[in-house]
Image (tube, rainbow, N blue to C red):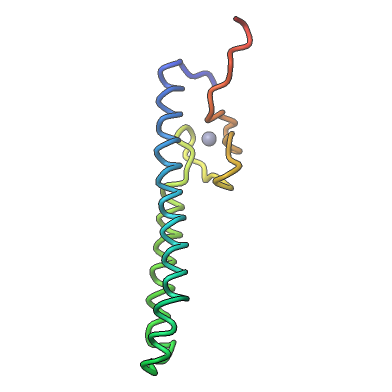
Length: 106
Ligand SMILES: [Zn+2]
């Protein structure tokens, strides 16, 4: 499929935006899980609150993050779900290259 230069630039910008959102979501879930493990868990233990009281909320929030990622982390060209955030250079569905490369014929 052929795209005009303008479209390609737009797609790449959109990809960058989605990638930063994806990184924010990733960072959030890391910080969230760390604070659960290091802060919430010991406090709840100290207070004698059973894990079954608060753990479901953790699962719900993590589930929400996963849902948000599956909405955000999509190819701007074909809307296909993308894979590994740190290794995605091409869309595995439509083959679009998200990073500009030197043109071969100049
Ligand atoms: Zn694609």
